[in-house]
Figure 1: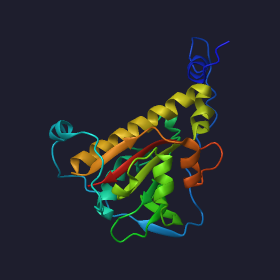
Figure 2: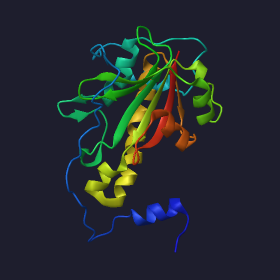
Figure 3: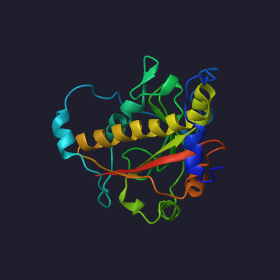
Length: 228
């Protein structure tokens, strides 16, 4: 019997001829009923900016410089592919289960209080969940990365049960793939906007979950440091 958790997961989530998928229901997105504040974001631009090929040529992960800030327009553009438009988002999701949730830990964003926010894709807005940022705790959670350089941290979390409801245990694969799709688009957009973005996939899961006050069944997937 395979005991390695990673290998066991892939073995159990294999799809073979004759296997049936649950296909029970399409889950609903997460909404916070009583946030501290709700921050509307400006409408994102659909035109302008550098060409895609030039952006790809310049694309590279890099840590932000110390002390730089972002604007609400920056955040609006970065979150555009994660937003819901006509019932769909800007990245693939198997069965449109959308097991992905998005949080922002804002440190230096012009006109916005520092704190932890949840992104609501349907309305393209941020809901404040907690005020202030514990930089020391986040630095420890990210294994010493200089979080003080970042104007914001964008955290993608996974609720695999949404995909599992449609595809069984194989839904765990799809949840991980979705984090890759969404994270890649954010990184590419950051490069096109002339911003710095650094993906952190190595972190203490329990600490990140604690800092975001995640409920059971919701897991950190990727942290992106954003700045200039």
